Length: 249
Length: 291
Image: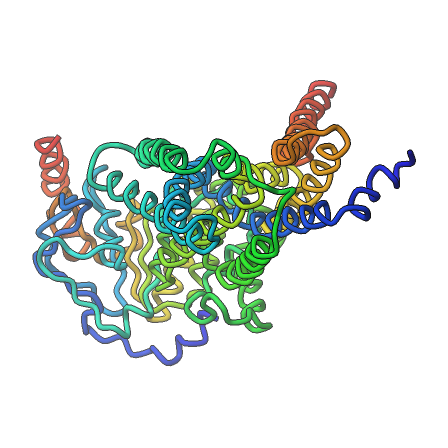
C-alpha cells in the first residue's frame, strides 16, 4: 500500500509542496493564528510546536482545507491537495459511534472508493495489511469505543496508511498514547518520510521533535520561528512563544 | 376466543384494520433508519421539534385547499425546512445554542399551526391533525406513506456510507472531499418528508414516537448500525400490530396505543437489553464483586 507509490516518488526535490504567505486562520472571523509565512518542502519532516492555544491545530485544519485563510494566502496545487491526508486529534472523533475498527480504518480508502463504489477485495486486503502494520489485527472486529487511547491512535494511523497520501498532516498523534506506542508510531512516520512523503506533525514533546524532525515551526498565535529545528527551538524563541501567549491571555 | 382469533381475526375481518397495519408498517420501515441516525447523532429532540414545525405548513395547506394531501405535504415540507434553516442561522449568528433556538421556533410553529387549524376547521379536524387517522386511511394516504417509505429506504441506502462517515468523523470526511454537509441536508429533508407523510397515519404529535422509540430501543440490543436499523423496523412494525390490536379489543384510540406499545418495547429494552441495559449492568457489577 504505502510502498506502492513510493517508487514513483523517489526524487525528493526542494520544490515546496505547501506555501503560506502572511496567512491567518481562525473561526468566525477571529484569527487563532496569523502572520505565518514559509513553506513545507516536498519530502521534508516538520514539527509544529508551541504552547496551548498557539493555533497549531487551527493552522493544520486550514492547510487541510477545512477553512479558508482569513488573510494572506495558502498555496497547494490541486494535485497535491488530493494527495494530502490529515490525522485529526482523537477528541474530534465520536468514539461512541457503533463501528468496528476495520470499518473505521477502511474509511481511509474514501478518495478511491467514495460514497457509492463497492469496497472490493483489494481495498479489504489493504485495510487488513494496515491493521497488521500497526499491530491491531486482533482488534479488527471490535467496536472503536472499546479501544484504549493507544489502540485508537494506532487505528487512526492505519486509516492514514490506507489513504496512501504524499503529504501527511498529523494533529497531536502521540497525545494519550503510552511511550511504547509513541515510539512504534514515530518509527512509522520516519519510514514514510524515508519513502519521500512530506510529514507535518503537531507535537508537544520537544525531545521527540529534536530527535526526529529536521524542521520546526514554532507558533504562539503567530509565527515565532520557522526553520531547522536546532535554530528554532532555542531558549530565547521558546521564552518568546510563552511570553506572547501570556500577553494575549 | 383463541389467541389466533384475538391476533388475526380483526385484520381478516376488517379492511380498515388491514389498511391501518399496512400504513403503520410502512411508516415504521421508513422511520427506522432515520430514527437510528437521529439517535446516533444526538438529535433525538430535533425530530420532535421538526414534527411540530411542520404543523403550520400542514394547516396552511389545509386552509388553502381543504383536505388535499399534496397541499398539506408541500406546506409541511416548507415550514419544516424553514424552521430547520432558521434555527441553524440563529445558532450560528447569536450565542443561543441550536437546541434552544430549535425549541423556540417549533413552539412558535406549534402555536401558529393550532391557530391556523382552528381558524377554519372544526375541533375534529384539529384532533385528526394532532393524533392522526390511522383507522381511516384512504387510498391516497396509504399510497403516500408507502411511497415515502420506499423512497426513504432507497435514499438511505445511497447515503448510508456518507452518513456513517459524517457521524464518526465529519472533519475527516470533509478533508477527503466527501459531501458530508450535503448528506446531512438530504437526511434532514428525509426526516421532514417522513414526518409529514407519517402525520397522516399517526398525527403530528405521535409520529415522532414511531421514529424515536423503536430506534432508541434497538440500540440496547444491537451493537452495529445496520443491526439497529433492522431491529428498529421490526420493533416499529410489531408496535403497530400490537397497538392496533389493543385499540381494537379495548376500544382505545389507535395512535396512542401504538406509541405506548413502542414505549413498552423501549422500557423493556432499557431494563433487559444486552447492550448497556440496566439489568445487564447490574449483573455484570454483581459478578465482578463476587470475585
